[in-house]
Length: 108
Image (cartoon, rainbow, N blue to C red; front, side):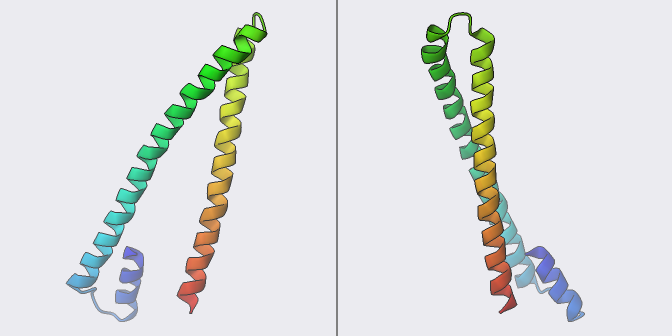
């Protein structure tokens, strides 16, 4: 948003007004706080899944497959990798859709 205000100011050869600068600052602040909060909750969720998957491997894989120490760690790593890739892919698709929608709305 700050870029748009600067570009508008540049195009009209006027400095952004105090209200425009304050609005741009407020929007950027809210955006950054949202990113921070989302990252924090994402970390908490990741830690919860981490414990859950570790417990599953320890309780169900290791007792059923003797001597599976390295196998259970590999299985855990594969599960975590699969989940991370799946979530990242889905979030990337969602982000692309939202970006396309914003660009379409700004073109109007």
